[in-house]
Image (cartoon, rainbow, N blue to C red; front, side, top):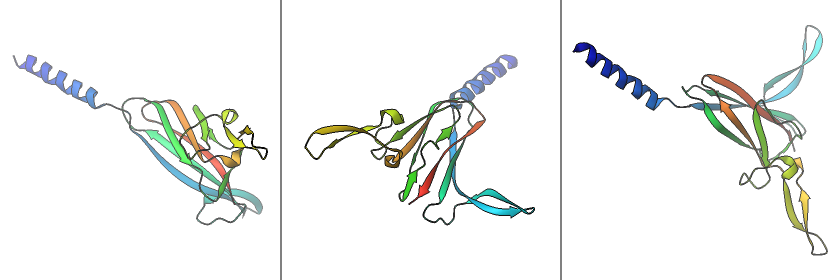
Length: 162
């Protein structure tokens, strides 16, 4: 009889563990800038924390993510606003395995750059459509289709200080 009780208890424990297994994705972000230094008599570029920036400086934003859960995270979405006082550097967004889309309306809607358009009234009163330029982007979204358990990755972009 003891072996039957043990089997039942083991089955309950396994079901409980399965019921609590889920993805657990955490994200951290860093902001860095490149500086030129002299190392072994040679000028080299290195990234340092962007604790102070000047107009024209390029800041590199990197979001590191990790799924520390027991299940894959599917359709994981990471949004990041483009900081005020900066301009997105065209073509700088990256993220292996991520679909990258942009917003020009404060993060309400996201589309690929070729589909980002807006309407405006021309001087003659006609309503015209224009393609948005990278300088008009307000947010970036990365959608990663699958982040397996215990897997990490990075996404990022660059901005130029106004």
